[in-house]
Image (cartoon, rainbow, N blue to C red; front, side, top):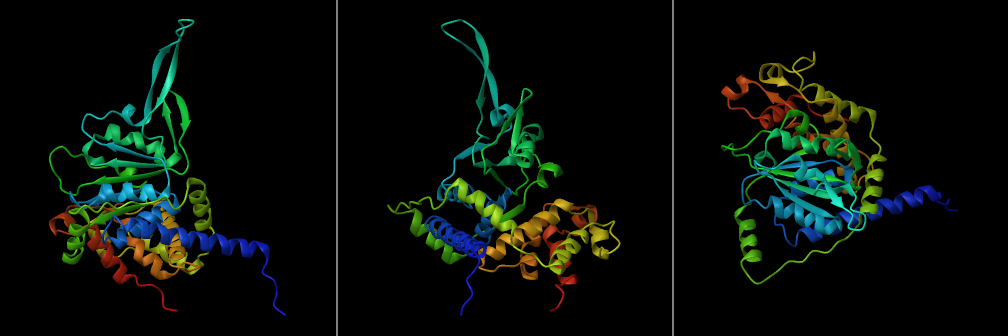
Length: 339
């Protein structure tokens, strides 16, 4: 006689199936508009399911803005876009108080007018085009999910995601993001050029009368539930320890750091890097229909999670090494423990 599945287990299985169905539906809807960039799409969705923020780095014309807008539409969330410019002020992001006069009594009162930050998905377009003073207006929002205006504390709507884009070309008029702000991004996702066949597909989609329409497949409440579900994914102690060892190995002051880390790296990844690496691996496992985190999840996400958290020195610059080169070498010398 078969034993009955406990209600809790049956309910959990139902929620996992719904998560995987929504993930597949989102990918299907986005594919109507976006060609290729499968790894980028996966990383943005991981950030959404974890409750993190994503920095998207790519050359002009690689569909960064279109990708974010399309995903927001499929999620059924409130979407706002800020075009970052050198003259943008913090109040243009957070909102400001204005004086309003009551026509009946003539009494004047302060009224708060919310800025574009009061949305579920905020697209910070070309975030490196504005000075650090304005960039830092996002710091409190990204960490505390709130903002302070003239001493008044305002909670942001949940869920809240910042998807920021920046161009990697260092031109006059760009301001590198402060390290404290970079560390608040779960991923630094890099968009590269498409293959020739994919570019042909883009031409077919965008130079005819065809207009792609995407439909919402979920809502805010369900996404918050998915974020709680992701945190319930189990991870073995050995896998979690491997993630921590990888992050610690990026710090030149750590006794276990390889020689090339000591030579080329000034500062390694923070504890937040290890937290985000484990959380992202949990979401990736669930998105791939697995119920536990594997070493492969950790290794697959290590570079996009850590590439913006390590600060290279002049030796790396003189040898023309990038953060990705250092991290690839680290993964080679620190393979996953064998079964």
